[in-house]
Image (cartoon, rainbow, N blue to C red; front, side):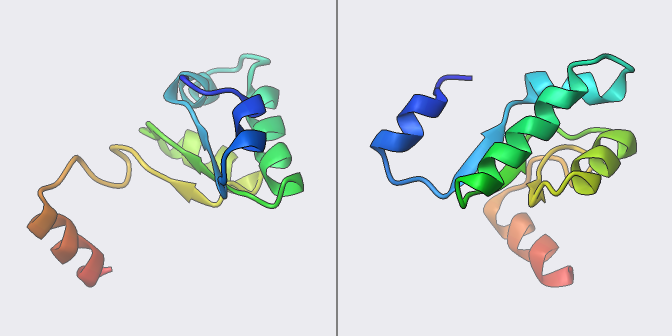
Length: 93
């Protein structure tokens, strides 16, 4: 939301984050879905990983994984956790 693709040329980045605004569109039959697919594709062409934020529904997760998104974050995975709870969550996985 606060950056642009132009900035990735100026700073050393290795990951493009897909804003929740776009992820929210994946739960509906809107044509904006193709934009998420293209963001993932651009990340791959630039040699970056992609991470989608705000994933809340299985349909969003399925779409993202089907098109090669590398990582997801959001309530579908877990609610926000304290540092200790996060460590326990990661160890249990």
